[in-house]
Length: 306
Length: 196
Image (spheres, chains in turn purple, yellow):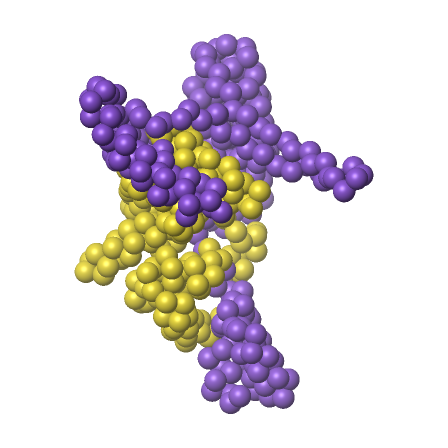
């Protein structure tokens, strides 16, 4: 292999997209060629640097997309297969070994059905023909597998079946589930949606505690922003202010910090000065520094501590 | 991507959704929608456009799910719809200027992408600046790529899809996808040489 060809192969090598033979030839060449070895190191660094360009959608955006889709789907008539497609579906035999033999039988049955259906089946019945009801969707996962003797094995499967509960958000049971969903570590989208419902009832002390907890501990900025939204009328509440101050100095997300400033400066007080001055010392976001400076100016305080 | 253990459930969900089960359709959406949104956001670099692609993709899926015959995987079928919509949007955008991500508000200038992205750099201002500049440069290179190069690069580098699958989704060969990826990485190398 020549260096020119090796150079072309380097990015594909890092993506694992070379054939076995190509990879083998490249590795042999790299072992022997110092220039291509350092070119591979540079390519690796570039490969890693490119990760910085990836954008991750916020959970808020995802939640918004899901809500909009749900609204739009609700206004659509379900697209159903036409009568002939469903009839064909009803006669499709899915057990593959027998399919070739069974298909002519199905065809004959179709012809016979057409002949009799035209005489005995009312026209409006056609739309529902051949539809079997399905059980509720179930998510399953194999928990463990073990031999049980005489050549047999035992497989234990965990199954999660859906249940639909409905009720008012004031209902204790519903609220309990909402609190649990708001802390579900596996699904940030679910947390955003739960927070969206909870935030409209911040007068309840339980709900407010859940909002404050999410603001301090949720790993997702979208969830924290929703919690902040729910706390917007509690900027003067001492407990809320205490948490907001901690979040302002510790949260990594500039959007959250900006909103916390907005909330805190709703009720101005000298206690804010120290916090804002401390923030000025450590903040590197230009926009937040500007907001902070403005707030300090309004409080007739200096930007720096002495 | 769906876990192998979930494949059987996925087929059940598709069949139930084909018969009009709304809950099954929603579950199906949730299996893939984060990846579709990520793909659209990275290709179009605008949350509003990404939302439009998300809506259009899943509405098309909803309307034509009854035509899905399991000839290919649902994932491939879905991505084919999403990538074609993204490619169309990118081609249309070629005739107008790439949208500026900075917007003027009553409180000053803010970056729209701040509402999208988690802050990744730590408290180190120098690293933050480097990371910001690097992202800016990557965005410039992405904007200079052809829609196909950009799509292949995004699907391979950020979505981790195999070139064979990408070719299938874009209606082209694995070899053509490989050439697109090669050109895209060459452009990146030429533009980001001083960062690495």
